[in-house]
Amino acid sequence: MPAIRPDRIRKLREELGLTQDEVAREAQCNQGHYSAIERGLIPSVGARILIGLARALRTNVDYLTGTSDDPTPNKRLEQRDLTQDEEDLLLAYRRIRSEAQKRLAHRLIQALIAADEAEDQIA
Image 1: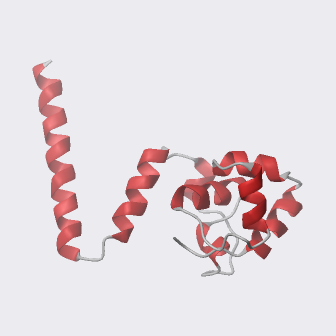
Image 2 (image 1 turned 120 degrees about the vertical axis):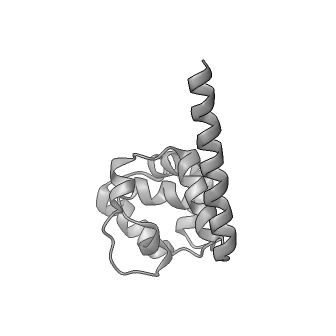
């Protein structure tokens, strides 16, 4: 789980005039959990909460984790064009280190698409 920067989280929330509860709902956690994150009592969070925080605070994951000093939101997060399942799959794919396993994931997805298209042609 990635480490987060509670100072950045609190600053953005206050700049946007959001309550802890509003941010917590977007991040899919309760207000008490969010408060502990903001106070630095929880040093890292899972991908779903991290993405929710980035959305609610109109920033990007890299800024919240301190790997970038640019708070500009990712275009994808602004548009919210991916479903939660799609975001989860993307994050899981990014965790694969082996190029051979990435190629295997691509082939599997292509096979699933082909099977889906074949079902459509039968129906």
